[in-house]
Length: 497
Image (tube, rainbow, N blue to C red; front, side, top):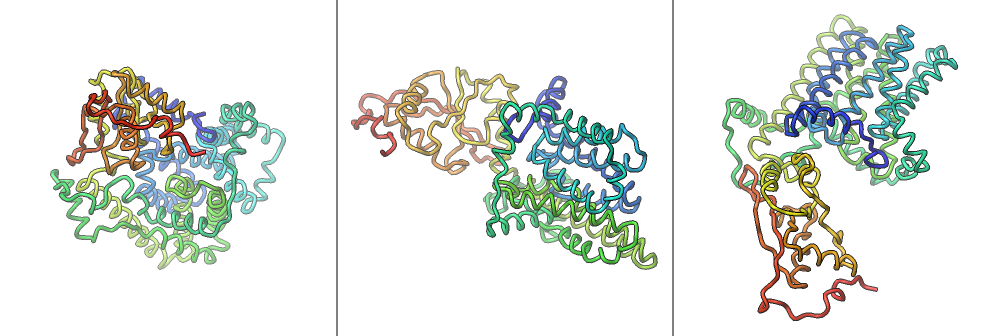
């Protein structure tokens, strides 16, 4: 386990990848992209089995062009790529079990659910959604499938997939639930999470997070390649769209539900709706969850499942006019998705990545390979793990902040003095005005000066836009004429009381 709710499934995947492919943007992104492609293919199979070929094509067209699904999967921000694969894979296998009564499909489906739990214990939300939806929509099928043998097989497969999580919680007395199952019905918090779900659904949630907004650069980059020029021209011609029409599609799907009564689409569409209510409802009432895109997107691809089944069912129910109308609606939704993706790409071309996605991390990693240091202290958030990965663990990296923004106590100040006095210890931080925790480097320098040391700048690392992002420095003693006359520094930084 990496955290109380985060396991090492992804670690094992990339352990294998990095044995044959050096860490780089390609070796990091391509496996996640392939996981996303597999999710789409399996989603087609599940939809085809559950609601027919037309629903499968509609659902996959919407999912494959969904801006947030693509961004969070390719960058595996969350992480979410394995979660989507385990969810769709498990559902597809259980649909296969329902139709073939294959014990292998039953065991494999629950094994994938177990892996999903180990990967991220929040997968429990999805399992609860699937369980309640099955009980509500397919009670007879569920009852016919219940037997001691099936229960034992499913339970054993689930536990096997989640075995590291189970062992961890036995040893830690259920810390995953104890440490994370805290609930709140605060109206403002619920309102904020509902808003977050909406902007995740409409594709706009990651603007300004991964890519800079237009006003952040005085001189945006000019597009160079034909693709870049075409993307920026299309973005300008269409008014730089930042939202798709998926929210409207979900509302339309709900409005179409009464028309699907007594059709084959009725139960699959209600199943998707119940799943969404239960799965999202849990993150809505759980504290410190549901307030970011990487939580809301965990319920994907069921919004697309709902829309696809509703559209396909309507086309089936009204065979004359509805098929053409549903096809046109699907095409418009796909176009709206693609235009949002294009706006995101054009903005990336013009403005480059935001601070937490800056391409300056690559020259920083190259520079740190040439810096002779016994230890490298990382002052601010957002670079430690990337440097560790790109250096394959060869850099002697350490957390560099001792204070957390608070005054240093005596032990911390003693450790701080040891660090700044050592000539082979180097510090890395963000430049002023670009820190995740504003003033952290300034506080570090201020305390160092009070105990007789000043920073010596070694390197300033710029990103492709020319903007300085990182600074690499060490400390050296201040000359005697500059040494400040001051009270005992320990007293000056001892917490009040």
